[in-house]
Image 1 (cartoon, rainbow, N blue to C red):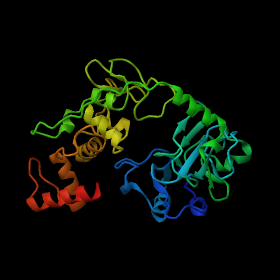
Image 2: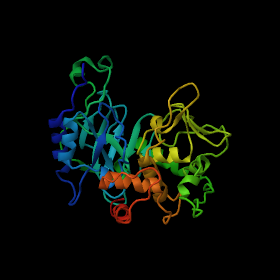
Image 3: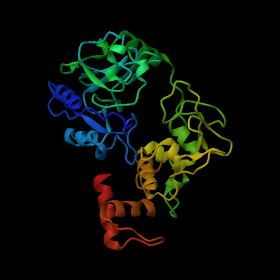
Image 4: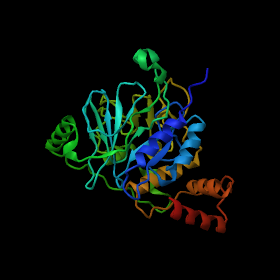
Length: 356
């Protein structure tokens, strides 16, 4: 039996309400999420301008069975309030009900300076700057027996609950639980910044291949002592102990039982692959890393490393990354060991400069 399809009319109802009363120039940051899931599709970072969808493009993806996410960015006015309990008293606004039919999301606009991201332990989050939620109309499989009987026809669906345009909100109008959490977070003395120096290319190859897992842990503000457990870099987690560095210098995800070298970890951070795809399965799990033989992984890891100061901005782009762009954008597939023809090479550099 196939999974229920997303509800396109619910999505259109939601987006119509969202843009009513929105500030001039506002365009929602919509992007593809997996069919039947909440995770962004792999292949490109959901934060990338290239991943951004128009409403029409989002409808086309939903017609294929896919879900849609929406994010507040660092530069737009959208603020998302995620109420995990469904009992929080929030300012009246456009609201949605989540797949469990218990919690929900409030949609607001705010004026600069933008309200910060705030995460509580059990009550929910304010997702304002490069965090996202799933929009109404999307469907994620849910056990209907966990849903109140009166609402089981909507089990798994995200739906509009309070049909009105988003209200404007200030920090002081947030529920007290968020303001208390923010003040608590601010009262914690900052830790000394981790010592991290970007890798420098040797001239023989891109510095990408010299970035190691310890560099990544340090750059992401995690402990660098071997075997010490800490919250994963790329997973939401309540355990706080599902990632570590090993004595042999690898990064380990204990949620998916995968190990990572620097390139593999940067591939996940870029959004090109998920944890279980890019990582090497622990002994006995079988399989191998999908980074092997994938030129796209090298390109997106290099781009992420360059944009996030793991390597210098003028670091030379790896040959295999050039080949990936040549094949993706120009349809030119280089043979093993072949250097790109001069005109193809020049066009590839222009594409990288203009589009990435």
